Length: 310
Image (cartoon, rainbow, N blue to C red; front, top):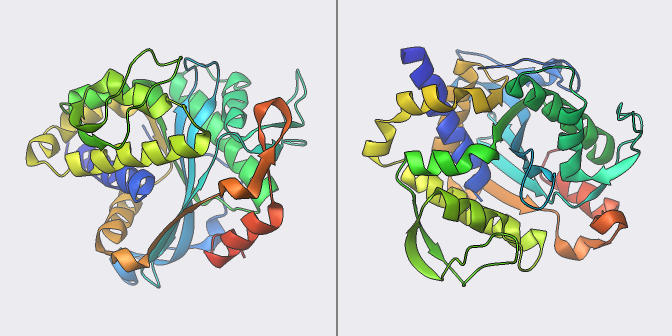
């Protein structure tokens, strides 16, 4: 139980802060082990060097159809310089998928979030967690091909279980800036301070009365509320039980030591050394199949500035 507690406690810290700073599976592919420099005796929080963590919130089958990965972010953990950068990608960006193995039928281009779905759809595995890993693997390859991003580790959670997770911790207190709804969610979320139950949180996370960029901002509010909720001692006491309940919908190749070291960094790094950013709406234009084309020079230039790519 102690080991399980460390895993889920570290996961909770990492996941909440990654998304809202703004059963382990290991897979081969775009992960570059030579980019890591791990030392238990040196460096900040027991690590040296820097590595990129792919963080996905998967929506395998949602109310608008198969949307794939609802949340896609890369976290750059720089242990030597005590810095963190988090970069968010809209699921509607149009990406090149040629050569990634999407066959029968062949797909050479798709919306970014759909790549995760297509990877799960073509998985040769039968368990849910294994298909999640396959979808994550393909997403990492796609980010490498399109954005020159190298993924050292991954952390994926199935957001189809988000409502149950929220209800398990007693809902989320959150200040909703404006009244929010759209034809798909079937719920009106009123403005103001309130505690949302699981169904309301899911509806608010999925509502798109404006654009996917607005949805990303609303998801930031949700996960900041989640981060704050998880500091409640009464909620922290439930962590071992939460691990037992939800361990089958979490996939990561981070070891227990790496989870705790990363959680340490996220806790200790000063706010001035944390950078949150995303693909800007003004860098995009309408693309095929309701997607968004994106300005490669602007996006890759910003990724280089943040140290996410060479």
